[in-house]
Image 1 (cartoon, rainbow, N blue to C red):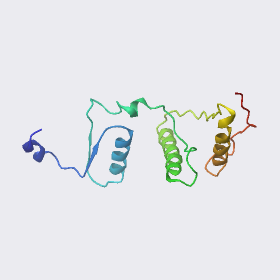
Image 2: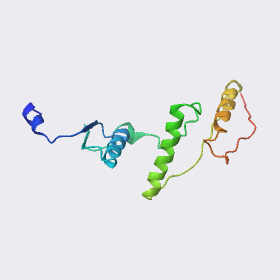
Image 3: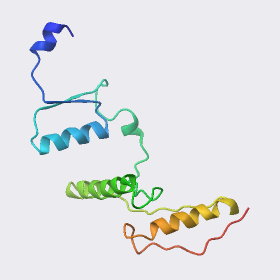
Image 4: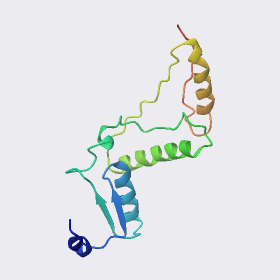
Amino acid sequence: MTAEKLSSSPATDFLIVGGGIVGLTIAREIALRRLGRVTVLEKEGGVGYHSSGRNSGVLHAGIYYGSDTLKARVCSQGSRMMQAFAEERNIPVRKSGKVIVATSSATAPQIDALLSTCTGKRYSSRAHFPRRACSD
């Protein structure tokens, strides 16, 4: 693009580089809040062709972070928001739960630490935590 073409392009208030899930989410929020004009730049022919299009499809609960951390709160809130977004649009979400397994007796204490994180207010009281068992 030449300098002349760039200067004659329509003005934008927010320029988002990347049409993945993060870029599009930010652009959507700016538009919904009517904060200004948004432009999304994507190098591919469509959106979501890189890691956003190849993710595991899991809504993370943030259990690997301390319950009082920003990461845990962002994961938990983001998961709830994505489920609500999908529900409003009749997009199916499978709530299958999570199974975490100690691979040896040496890693069993890590499971105990995760259990204490999961039993906080942020997680369902329906969770079932059987007595741990390890086989080396």
